[in-house]
Length: 444
Ligand SMILES: Nc1ncnc2c1ncn2[C@@H]1O[C@H](COP(=O)(O)OP(=O)(O)OP(=O)(O)O)[C@@H](O)[C@H]1O
Image (cartoon, rainbow, N blue to C red; front, side):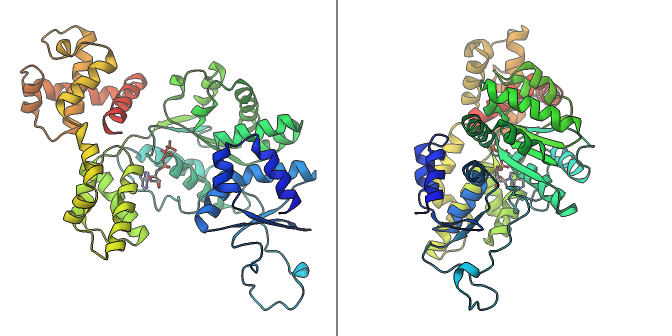
């Protein structure tokens, strides 16, 4: 094993879990030469994961070990295999083979996540528009841009899309994407190596900093402090900041108030769970992208039954595609029902009116019998309206049926509840959070 790589792994041991280290980094083979370190991954999946999750950290450690930036090249293959076929036959010994040119800047962006591959719907159109504006006019449109919402709804996708578009407009633009854990990891490493100046320079020298899932900063005081200063430096010199969070940041416990206030300086946009039509459209688009033949009936079946998030929808599609491929069968609705029986049952199970009533009552800490009673005090009326609206959105029951299930109420009462709650969800952050949390619990 290359000595440099061994030392790099030793350093990383402190920052990464043993599982991550064994799953992703140990299987890599390394070869170092004068031009940098070459890492070989056993397959492209490992390669993509290493590039996306660990490359920035590896480069950082190598820079610490070598006292200067140290290029890393990632390839599929093994140390003993020949390097990727050169364009022309190379007669000279390996040491003289010119290395492939390194990208000028390691932006960590996934090229598949673009605006073209993002399906727009009511639930995400504001987020998409804002991300496009920011990408077209970085540092000037909205700064920071914060995309927030539940898991698997496309926040990361939009963030990468913005970064990719910035690069398309200007390939020299220094965009840096990283997950918040990577920011934390780099900072811990810098603290340990007493190289905080370098750390600061590195993050402040970018044109656009994209940090995913900042809720992980909660409770990490030193990280927040450092991020706060990075934020200020970038903001003042009009460098673009894009962040994502799994909820409205004001609702994240243990996030410093001054940081929360900074996050509100630009534009915060909620990404909502997609409605039925958007789910079906996303599914067809993903199937097309993956070259999987899926007709509209199958897309509608999955979109109707899997409401939790796009990641689950995509997971179901992948399962279907793999099974269909294995058995050499076309993906019909019968095949989908059969293959995904357990999965669809799990998703269907939670979504009955009684279950919605029970979960809503628990969430708001009220008694189920009070929720269904005629009492009209506000502490009961609001949860009741929410439960009615959830029943309308998440089940196939009609307004009269829902009214009946809620203590024999008229269908106009249910209609009014739905109208009120939808308006509240759009305008009131607290209400939106309750709503999204309940949807997650019911559909997750
Ligand atoms: N509107 C959409 N169009 C196309 N693909 C989408 C859309 N929304 C989500 N996806 C896909 O769903 C998957 C999950 O999305 P993503 O990782 O962006 O979610 P997220 O909101 O960042 O979730 P998390 O908070 O868990 O990181 C990705 O493969 C993404 O491409």
